[in-house]
Length: 147
Ligand SMILES: [Zn+2]
Image (cartoon, rainbow, N blue to C red):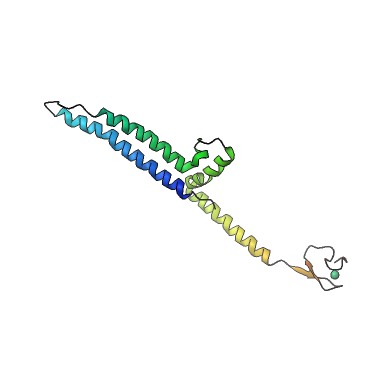
């Protein structure tokens, strides 16, 4: 089972943090402007600079979050289709949610069943030399006589 690396998770959360911060900065300007309307003196200008910084933070945060979720190749920063598929795999699995979880669980169950079957291989004893051979063997491994 593939999983998203710790670095990418950290990147993802940093991106979300940047987005939240940017959003607060951006929105705060509107609140500030709203309160300014009640300011009879109008002595101060609304902090439009904050809105710009907020916007940049919001966009940068979205980008960082994307890199965290899809990896450097998956988000298109690194042109490597092979790695993109690899990077996107955990992302797509997370998106697929329960259906994919159920499918991979079935896959695991199948693999366990297969490995258990592998342990119980039926062997056939050679009539001539007594050596053990695979069930589907036509000739004895020990003496070469047909079984
Ligand atoms: Zn034999």
